[in-house]
Length: 111
Image 1 (spheres, rainbow, N blue to C red):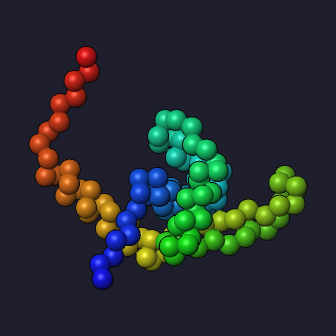
Image 2 (cartoon, one colour; image 1 turned 45 degrees about the vertical axis):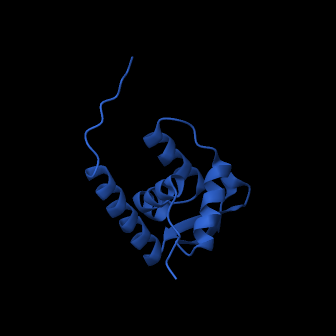
Image 3 (cartoon, rainbow, N blue to C red; image 1 turned 180 degrees about the horizontal axis):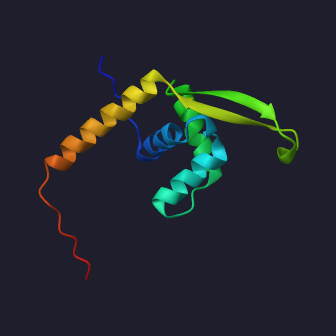
């Protein structure tokens, strides 16, 4: 049976943000990282929904940090990419690169 799972665009962006943020990868910084690179707002609920999907696929793992007073005693949930998650990121990059290389230069009609 073939593996039919693939990363969606948003999931891939989340994984890349987690890699970039390292030990500071939790919901709000992940959302801000995406906003910075996309140039538009990212709903925090969308980020958490994607993180739950990625965790269910064993592409990320999470752990609770220590509670902090500025969060009203609530702990942050930190995320880390798994080996399988990293493998999926590299696989997706290879596929996208091959696809881009296989098409002719695109000229955008800006009129």
